[in-house]
Length: 473
Image 1 (cartoon, rainbow, N blue to C red):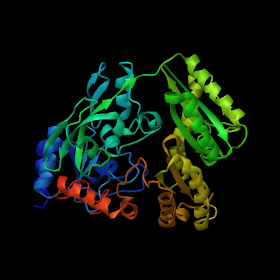
Image 2 (tube, rainbow, N blue to C red; image 1 turned 45 degrees about the vertical axis):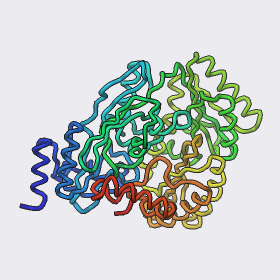
Image 3 (cartoon, one colour; image 1 turned 90 degrees about the vertical axis):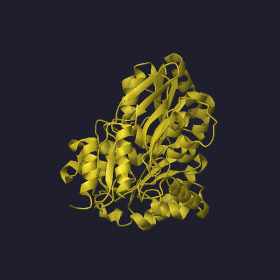
Image 4 (cartoon, one colour; image 1 turned 180 degrees about the vertical axis):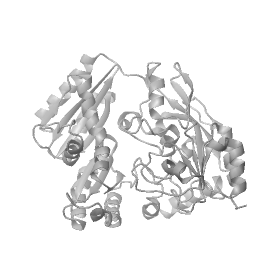
């Protein structure tokens, strides 16, 4: 008998033989990340059906000193849900825990299991005339647990905040295999330390989120998107200030898109043509939503763009004449990551900066990249409204991916150093995972890292929950 036969047999008794996957062919989708950049090897993949089963899995693993890697939809981009290559870790997939448990229209709350997909949440809320305002391109695959574990953002953070702001309560299985039921639907609860906020954004290193109470809003009566072209990122920042002043809470999204992105999308998805007649350095996708009739939203948008033209902030504007046309604008934005996949691998950065410093970053970052690879392509886009920029560096046209991948570390170092000098963060919404662990130690103070380690030691003293993620082993 090998050292692992006893715990695997225990897991089979708890979950059923079909829900403890040990064959490499059965594990494949659980041990490789969405972009295919990272892969590991698991001892097994455990697939519990409820919170009690999660707790029992944790107890078995604790008894045998086996580490666990919690996993939701496995759409993360920093290796946070991927096992290492030791083949001694167990991936605990929450994909079977995928139900909406309760929806309270009066209280505008929804309780869902951690494995429920974002699209399931959207559909359940919509059926009651409500909306869960966190949106992103991977909504058909990403799950509630993963969104909260990474404190995910998306395109509507400008108005509604990150996942943390949209969660009222949690149910969590601790590293001891105990269940904390914090599924409170209260919007005010000032009774001691906020454990909810501690687990949100911890990437499965402090506990395993099994259910959550999510906050809903009334579904807007109207939603209108427009695309504008601009000569510089400075103009985009000025336009943002104007849009916030004129549209106020109606402003839902404000997405900055570089010319490289528009051309890349058109190259790989011809059904999405370059939207403007003339090439433009930058464009912005503006979205407004409103509880009033469409004519009001249209009037606010039209007035904003007229003022922007008069102030010479924009050079062109596209206002859709139909919902389908507005959807086309969002299709362009959401196909940027997909076009990058088609184009090949690149060096990715998910950074956050004070919005006013984004133009300065874009101006200074290009020479840094060109000093390392003169013909490298910069693919920059993101949520300008909340200061989150996706700054990716691709190989020169016609070159192999390796031409840029061999420079990954120098590029990361140069970009992250610049971000830090501008008072920014090296991770805005993707998390730290395993890919940014070493970088985190460079840009966090000794005191912060000491506090992180103390919290980890208190809640997971045996380092069994997602070791090597966020903190070094």
